[in-house]
Image 1 (cartoon, helix red, strand yellow):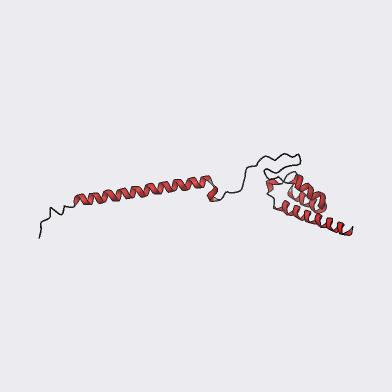
Image 2 (image 1 turned 120 degrees about the vertical axis):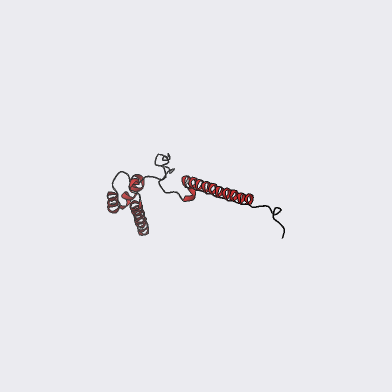
Length: 132
């Protein structure tokens, strides 16, 4: 019987530590019902009840998790920054920049081609040269 009490005590301590870590690392806008410091005190002074209360009431659930009623919570908009290769605005700006660079390269190439054509038109033919 003593082993069972020790095991339950360890489970309670692990649960309290997990709740404290979750509470302290949660974003400020995701902490619900009470201020963060009140939650920390509740978890410290009432480890079992405070930890369970934190996980059920104190934090905003991730989108798509099943709540107590069995329904899923509505999907919240993600506030994490996107990686550059996932950000549609960044990809659009890359496409636009690439298009502008291609247009500029084409314009320079056409100017160079026109200049070379003018140089060739201004040069006399080899047939018109007197033979030496």
